Length: 492
Image (tube, rainbow, N blue to C red; front, side):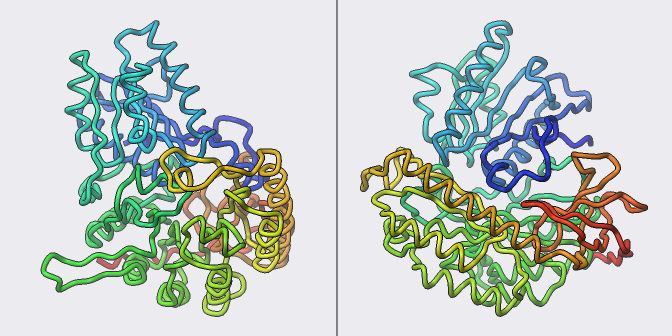
């Protein structure tokens, strides 16, 4: 089957040298590719936001394919347009609204076109989309994708259709996703859904429901199938992977995240394993020792801090302090090693944040020196605990000035970390051509930094040792010194 998704950034002049924050600012969606398996109707799907949303779109595409749809990369050719939405920031919602306006302009010319909103905005704004603004035909929440055939039947009859029911059990464990990545090298594997952390700034608990962990046997089965198809890397996804916890109905088998991580690592020594996202209150030494034990578990942890000040962290309901966070960073360095890649999320201008508290975020950054980070000015989200309890009292110009200070400092630290890689040999998984030149490949090292190098005799999916000779803020450059032979033997 032809792979059905491609990053929209692959269609434009989007360079590897962009910093992580610049990439995040682009908010580029993933869109569907052409698929021609004989199905009569065409689906165009556009996905925004986090990796979980992209993973969900793989599930949606699989369900729709089984119900008579191929995909298209042209909205003009589509019979159905889905937009998989994100509510994490105000500008993300505005982008979706702008796209819906464009889709509806198309619908005026093509009356038979069906438009649906999926994901987090669907759950939060269902009444507005369907009843007040009348801009969509279907609204489907993250836990209702199995109901798509019924909802499509309703829409085909000319009725509005909605299902935003939040499930306590749904994990889509038995659905084989259609893979987002067109390179056939890397894939997402969802291990859990929902979130029990009630961070005061976040809408996820209200749009994705409570945490539930997926059966580890289904995770292992899906991963083995990926290896058999030639994939070389999986990223285990969850809103908070460290709180993964599953047990059999009779209680005879229990699996936590460290144990699941080990099970996946043991499938094949040639399978790279990544995961996202970790929560500072939950990441355990057991997880860190598991990463240290297995060479194929990447030395990289995304560990969002959000603020460097304990009072602000308390207002955010993050349930840890500055000191706790720095202790976890120390544990990562001591157990895994000083070169373990650590990235973070940071929010500037949260409710009542003082200038001194902002400076504490900068000082924490100086102490940790993150490899990269995703940085945002606080955006009040309707329905969150912060919106109900606190005044959004920091002027926008102050938020943006603080954000620029955080970005500028992170750029210094990203360059500092990349300079540490100079003159060293890095094991890199070849993921595809560099966007600057078809004479070069790109891939990532264990620490999740992009490495660009001349192609030589290697091919996509190979592991290569690369001597790093130069760097930019976000990219390492080097030369292949060895193509590493495959040693794959799948362990069932």
